[in-house]
Image 1 (tube, rainbow, N blue to C red):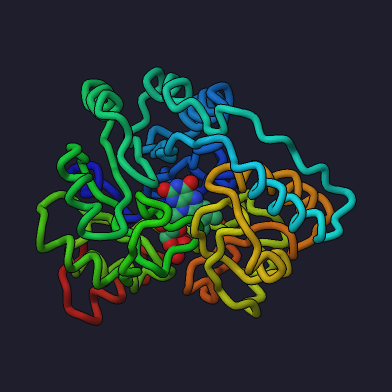
Image 2: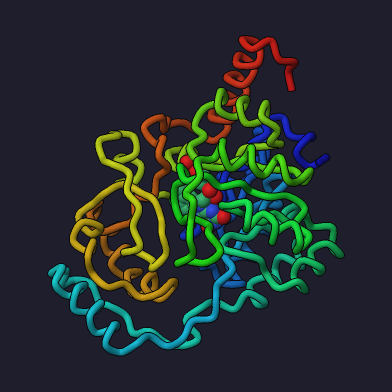
Length: 351
Ligand SMILES: Cc1cc2nc3c(=O)[nH]c(=O)nc-3n(C[C@H](O)[C@H](O)[C@H](O)COP(=O)(O)O)c2cc1C
């Protein structure tokens, strides 16, 4: 695909919802020869418009606007809600005002997409499923490339049938939310390389590999296997431009914590560094996504203000120990050098 072939560094800096991506970071990645992304899942239409417009003033490179496919959510069962509230109150965080949950519980995708239709980023991508067909058609009619995240061959088939232009193949190593379509669905939990080879056998669509990719050597390897690019989240969290919290960055660079999977923060499976909240909520009830996320939002914001690493989400992929503290443009330069030396070592023609 020309979009990927034109890149000096075949890397998408992953969309990371929750305000981690920002115009400086996205522009630095684009200017460095990769694709910069916004995780807009929880952003207001006004903020989305502002971010896209600010970034376009800084770069003409390819921008990826990413959203979640939220399933309609029924009002929470009152007994379950009471159980979750009780578990949260037992944490003893008196400074936190736990919020009320109000319908419709999920953001309005069509309102959030208005700025996308107006500003036309190069890519529109989705996590957690397939958006309405009208969205895919609208994107195509505006020349916007559609990327869909998949975690299995089963999901890849659905994404291909929905006319995706490319697939993001997310392995179990990935940091943040697992993009499985059905939150409680069966999951083979395939490692990225295994899933990539399975999906390569079934489609000629461009594939982007995601999960545990930290070095240019890893990028060279997935390209060699047949992917067109790598999507890297964790490696960009510790970039100077990233607005991940200071404690999040410190804990990634300190590399002392185990990586665990939890639903406690959001209601959906997500991978990150172990902390007190995850341990204390381990056997407790959780509300479905994104209601649990709404409920824990003020706690996470409070923990950031209080510089407390124990009550915020410290999302991280399984290879986070290789995080580096540097600017996004330095990271891209190093990735390129590492790719070249990997190819040289393998006597593979340079990309
Ligand atoms: C903090 C964080 C937030 C993420 N948020 C999103 C998101 O909003 N949308 C999305 O498609 N993927 C999201 N992801 C997953 C990435 O797209 C990607 O699959 C993952 O980062 C790859 O694994 P790695 O973290 O080991 O590089 C997120 C990952 C992290 C670490």
